[in-house]
Length: 356
Image 1: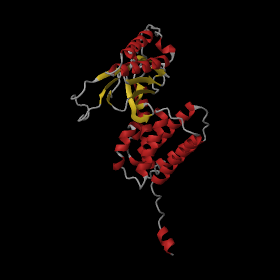
Image 2: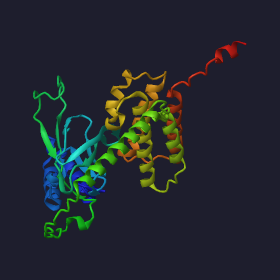
Image 3: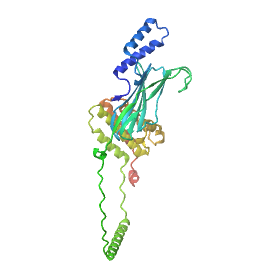
Image 4: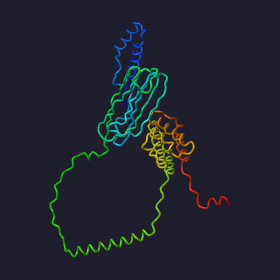
């Protein structure tokens, strides 16, 4: 993973910067403490602002891979660690130049030494070459009474920005396609042998008669059209795909993460085919917002909502599930498909036989 945020030495310097800032804010700090703070800063240096560290806020932007092939996806993650008492505003870009946003999400959690908020974006490059993901900005200030949303009243805002991230996108075209093609001269004009006009007329008559015979044959076949093959129901396609996915071997964290991506894609494709919602092109938050419009049975909406959010924790939040969690989420996907599949049509006369 290539990160545009702080490395391990950068994190050590960030902790030192937090200590320096805390001592500087203490109006009652004795002179020896201030002197010691100055000596520490002189020895180690202040944190690199380009790394996204400023005072009580630590912002790190990272991608899961910086070298991708055209058409493949990558994930950009913005992680912000801060004091829970601070008021934050995270940069939320609507688009990234050269990339199409496929999915996005947000996760916030409280940790022992503060608060951690993550924003992730699943991006797909739209052209090959050297692309750059822009710096992301975080605004912060101490919380104050009466603060509502992102108003400008109250303490002044401080900002911290991450570094831009370079991404190399390789083309899938063969190397020979980039080479200059050899230019060949045109061939000289050749005389046209027109032949006898009677021969051409005879050939045209023969073609007309053959075409008439073919049209008559086609008309006979269309008199009794064959029944069109029935389309495979969405739930049968989904259950078959889940069975194949369940038979795969999971060796290592990368294989488990790919498993969750494939499982989420199967469920989203089923929702799209079963309920007409284009779930493969929507984010998790957009799907959850549209659940009320779907005719789901009791418990179906909550089941789908929990499934999507649990899979996002593995796909984008670096959660490492146990083997039992992997089996459980696969069973939850099967139950969701079984519970929401359409009812089988009853054969004619079945009600009469049951009554008898």
